[in-house]
Amino acid sequence: MSGHSKWNNIKRKKEKTDGQKAKIFTKVGREISVCVREGGADPNSNGKLRDLIAKAKSLNVPNDNIQRIIKRAEGGEKDNYESITYEGYGPSGVAMMVETLTDNRNRTAANLRHYFDKFGGNLGNVGCVGFLFTQKGVILLEGEGLDEEKVMEDCFDAGAEDFDMGDDVVEVTTSPDDFSAVRQALEDKGYSFISAEVAYVPSTETRLTDEEDMKNMTKLLDALDEDDDVQNVWHNLENEEDLDR
Image (cartoon, rainbow, N blue to C red):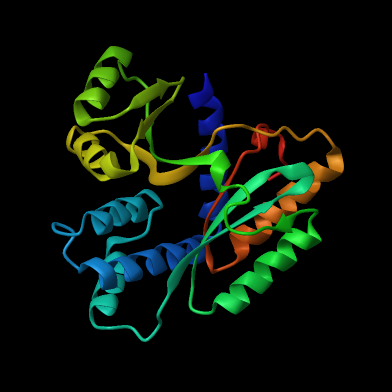
């Protein structure tokens, strides 16, 4: 099932991040800081902050770190980050969306253009690939040992649009507006989360078969992962499991 293949990709990403905790903590911390400045430091009244705290915990960010980030942002940090989403094409026309939080848009744009050019792609204008994606809430739950009928009932009771149960993972999709409420409802029901975020979901997919394209796609994704300004990368590569990451 599709959920199973997606779990393989997520598992590989989680294994990779285990060796890069400092960088992951920095990126999540930046998201939390911006969220606190925009909506306040109380997760009870700031739903997005509540979601980010859950995300941080799923990435094993210690609670003390989370609270320090919130207090620092509440006290008024000097850094002023803005959210910018870039669009472009990877090798052989793979559509890509890159979400960033930056305090220097010139630096970020130059770095991204360099990565795309170096590894067989090109950074495009706003709208060049965005029409190929739809924003959806995507929640991945630990599914081992769960009863499919009970999971389906709980997901739809929580307000989910759809769910897909694989061997050891449940993929739940929601509208962006309902994401926070659905995530909270499933948390209250006791489910364990692998990840939960509002994602860009592709409507069509591109398959890479050329070995050089596969190598360049791997290098491009790794370069973007390493950049502190890059928060998330979404793409429509069909056979991501074939990448050597």
